[in-house]
Image 1 (cartoon, rainbow, N blue to C red):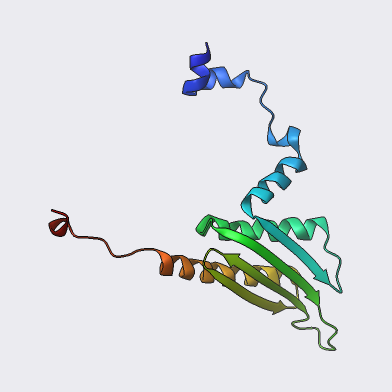
Image 2: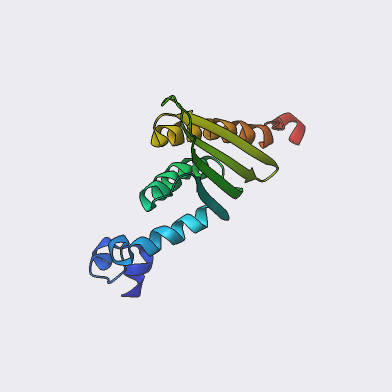
Length: 146
């Protein structure tokens, strides 16, 4: 009977009482986020960081860990500047400490969610470029291996 569970028999798993995402709730999501980043700090300047905004930022930062899993520290600063003109008042800044380098990006937009989107696009390009730099592209030819 246990062999069906170990081999992944779908008929045996249907009747199991495994906790699902819905039964665990936000605790699972919070622990999942902690596993993604060693230290994640999201702070606001002249702005209260709501749980919806926090979850949006962490969801977007998930793209970075898909490309590079050696992220040590992430600091995000969301600000609203006191400018008279409405355009580019909302700013998002991020410092990421990865293994071997520190990455920084900032973005300004009239909408904070659009600023976060632009910020993550910039960080994603930087992380991919950093990963390509540290990857060893020098393969030995089969002739030299003999």
